Image 1 (cartoon, helix red, strand yellow):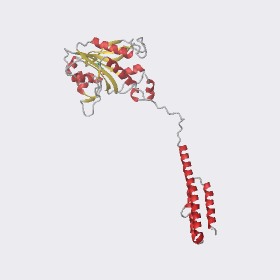
Image 2 (tube, protein in one colour; image 1 turned 180 degrees about the vertical axis):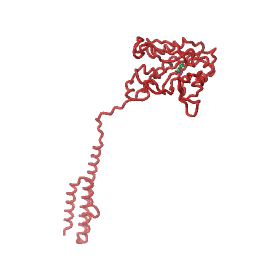
Image 3 (cartoon, helix red, strand yellow; image 1 turned 90 degrees about the vertical axis):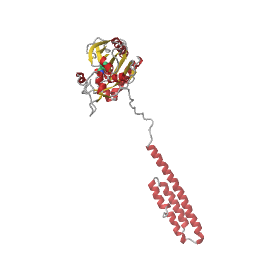
Image 4 (cartoon, protein in one colour; image 1 turned 30 degrees about the horizontal axis):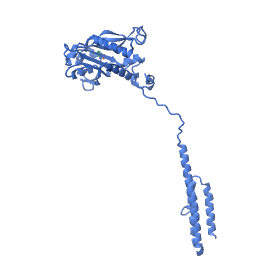
Length: 348
Ligand code: PHE
C-alpha cells in the first residue's frame, strides 16, 4: 500500500473538511479527528513498521509535512473564528450614540430656603449679624429667661416636645430662645443686632396651615435709646424690600411675655394692593410677624440693666411668608421635596 499517497489524500481531505468548519464545536471535532495524538494524521505513523527501510525517511517527512500544513490551516481557521466571535460580541454590545439622552431632573432650591436667604440678606445689608442658635434647648432659654415661668398660661400656646426622660430639655418652640443666649453671652454688655433663622417645633397636628416643625427668623436689637420708632422703621423697610416698595405696615397691639409692649405686624396686601381680595380675606392686610420692645424683665434676667438699655425683637414665620408670596396652599408641601412642586420655582 502506498502510504505516502494515502498521506496526501488524508491531507487533502482534512483541508477540504476544514473549509466547512465554522464554529468552536466543529473546530474541536476537526482537531480531534485529524490533529490530536490519536487523530488520523498522527496515526499514519503507526504504519512505519510496514515501510521499507529506504522509504522510512520520506514517509516520515510526508506525514510531518502533511501535519504541518493541516495544522497551519487549522490555526488560521481558529483565528478567523475568534475574530468572528469578537465581531459578533462587539456588535451585540454596541452603544447607539445616536439615541437621545434621558433628561435628569435638576434640583431646585426649596422656596422655603429662598425666603430664608432673602430675609437674611435684607437684614445683613442693614448691619445685622446672623446667629446660629440651637434646635435642642433648655427650658431656661426657651421659656424661663423669656419671662415664661413654669406655670405661665402662655406655655399652653406653645405645646412643647420634651426630650424623653428630661423635663428640662426640649425642642425649641420659638427662635426667641436665641435672644437670651445672645444677651447672656455678650460680655461686656453692649449693643446687639442679630437675626437667628432656624427651625422651631410645636406639638401641633399637621394640616394645611400647621406643621410640627417650621422655620422662624428671629430679630433682636439692643442698644441705648432704642424705641418703638426704630422697630417700626426697621419692619417697614423690611416689608418694602421683601414685598415691594408700595407696601405699608400697620401695628396691632398684641401680647408676648418677652416683649412689652407687643405688636402683631400686618403688611398691606401684596396681591391686591390693599383693596381686599381672597388672599387678605378682604381686609387689605396680611399678618406677617410678631414683635415688640424687649421686656425689661428679660433684659434684667439676661444681665442688661433696663434703665440703661432698651431693645426690640421680632419673629417672622418663614413658611407663612413663602406661602403668601408664592401662593402655596399647603404648608406640608415645603417638606415633601416633590420635584413637581419645586420645579416651578426654578430661577425665581
Ligand atoms: N416668638 C414669637 C412666636 O413664636 C414671635 C416673636 C418673636 C414675638 C420676637 C415677639 C418678639 O410667636
